[in-house]
Image (cartoon, rainbow, N blue to C red; front, top):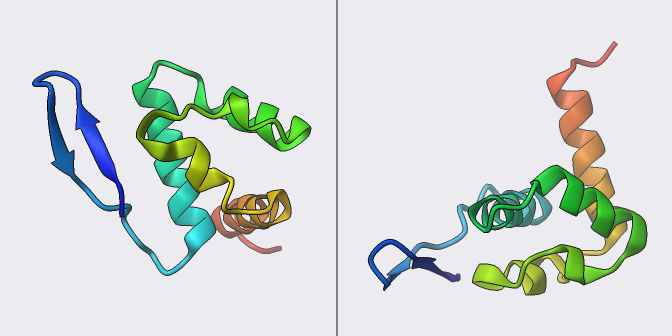
Length: 91
């Protein structure tokens, strides 16, 4: 789906987004990795985006900003809650 730039060699390596069948999950994980690669704190940046809706919180590196803009913020929130509840067990 997308190219990732390999900064150490200056070459481009084709690596698709790993697809799990859950688009919100796949995009969040991809954006998280892009933010880390650029030296940002992914949690802080994603929270800023979720609160404000301002896409400039997300790097444009590897098309991360355009990918996250494909999702509505409520879709992202649903995925975050689903993940949290799933990883902490349902009581």
